[in-house]
Image (cartoon, rainbow, N blue to C red; front, top):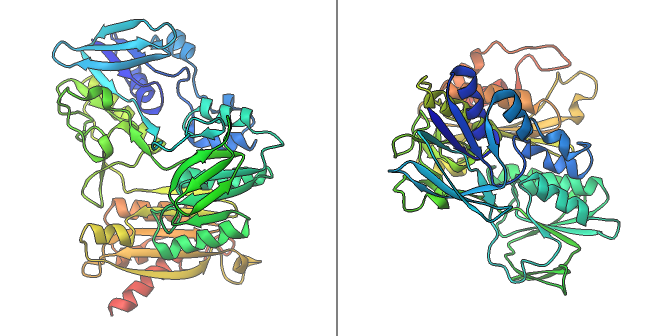
Length: 449
């Protein structure tokens, strides 16, 4: 069979590798509109401040590796612009030559990813205004930034802005962050986000809430950010207000789309059109707690969905088991972990919910300086059934361990009562006799009683 894959990053190449490793005699062709295959997008902020020594370190495999070692035909700078689903042909443009191309397929995977949102701000084309999604984006920022770049403005309060705030402060830049809402990291409830705000300000990040960017001023390079509340002088701008799935080329095909234009897929990564699959940032993910499709574009999901798509494309059925919405972020001295639903999300879904919040230590209270490394842990649960709905943890140590335990508990639809029954590891340097998760579960139990 002849397989075409649109997109050369996590989902697309995970699928391609499954096809070549688990079948023989097939032709695999990939089209990527950029020049780089299989790289770690999440490492880009750490390349900018030098924590990652080179952007080359973020590349897992180069196109020639896929060609020479695995027999996958790679096409860089090839953008697919149209798909004829009846004739099974993809059409596009070679961005280097301007020439049109077309290629037939037996089965097609759409793994075209997502692109940063850039509103129609006035003068948004001035030099010094960037988004951050690809290695060329990061390299452009690094090339533009020099010793004269003193003030950097971040637009948006999501994870990329938080990571970039830390990255830029660590190399001596003054950082301002503009957010049109009232908090950073909107996946957290406001009471937890307040901890992030305090820490950001302690680290010198200037926060501007309730401001909407309207445009920019400068001769050829950006000098001022204009908002509905005033202006901010700046030497460089990074806009990170969200992404939109790259699915416009499928308009008119009849393929079903869902949240934010993401292509709707079933558990086998099949779209509404026969022999067309989708995976990664351009596709939906089934959320096990919400019990509906969602769109949470993360590399973990892209790799899993890509592998599953590849197997299903060669008739080796495997179902995607869904997500619970787990994420983690390093923000200066804090680790921010979240999984499942926040109170805000539970309310929007009209689910009965309650929550408990505790302060605890990552280790036994009497051990060394554990009191200096406290964590704030919040559990969201159904007060009627005690089923866990989600959790948020912010602190300096031990966050990753707890958020992963909680993610596992959510996957298995556990209750707060069942959290108490878990046999979790204990030694004074690592935990209390009752883990912080269990301490929160006990508080929920007392509340119900």
